[in-house]
Image (cartoon, rainbow, N blue to C red):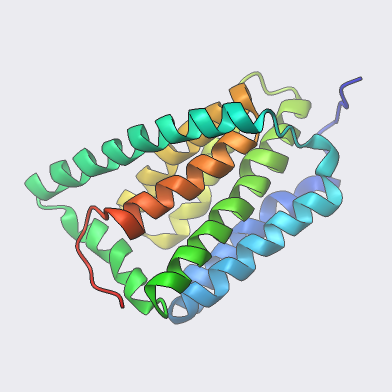
Length: 208
């Protein structure tokens, strides 16, 4: 029988925690981003697994792999052409600011592993625990509700493009989790991050 849940203050710390962690990571100690972001996402992921594990719907790993490969290409192309458009309208600096954070990473291998871990932990929280809790609250479109919260948390970055990007990523990850289970957005997030930052970044940078 599906577990039902009423909106109550017991879940409030779970909903507020990412906003606190994002402020610390992006605003208070931005120089330590690549140290703090894995810690922040790990806290969120472990919190979900320890307290809300029963809500997670993993789905089929095979279906998740097929769907994630296809969707990662689509998502990459959206950002590729988005960057091209931003360049045309002289707003590429917002993308540049995002990639400048990459230069603070220790090296390319470490960055790749960090991105893998961040993708895993973020999806366990946002689309694994939080989205399923919203569904059990009675939201008919939990993927949209989780996307709104995911977008709002990125406001602290003060980067308009990153906020808009969070909305696009949130929609695609949320719908894929809703339709196929958590394996799909986990794999999708990991593959997409590797594509757009490590393999074929949309903005050129050099990191040994």
